[in-house]
Amino acid sequence: MAAGNESDARRTTVQRKSEREVVVTRTFDAPARLVFEAWSRPELFRKWWVPRSMGMTLRSCEMDVRTGGGYRLVFGDDPANTMAFFGKYLEVVPNERIVWTNEEGGDGGSVTTVTFEERDGRTLLVLSELYPTKEALDAAGTGAQDAMHETFGQLDELLAELAAR
Picture (spheres, rainbow, N blue to C red):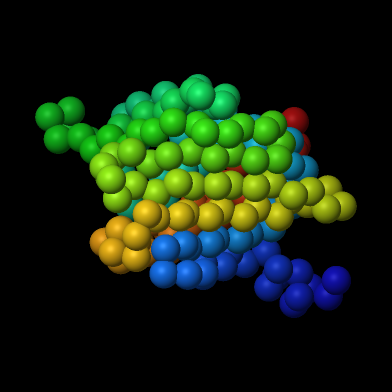
């Protein structure tokens, strides 16, 4: 693959696939097992998930990454003014797939599916967020998906560290 094409293939893409679904794709220079590990181990997840430019503090990161398990992420600098994101893992297939709910949005919460497909030692990651209605997706906006460019850049850095061990 030519350098220019390789650069394009690594770029994070964010696409609205339907009136209810947004899909983010990115290829990482790491095997699927390392990318899955970065998504499923709280001590690794908290190193890359929050975009540095946002200046947010991830106060706690609880993750029980197994089918039927749950997660809870709490953000905020002021203990009296925090924001929590939480849900359940509907399906976890190590090194291949994680599906979870986003329950903080009530009935308008989305279901997120992340797949990890390894090709020649690299991993194609596809993240899909499916909302119950067009209105729920419109209300959520694309801020989180847009932040994925920076977030996935941070994941690239972590994966390079993990691969060097």
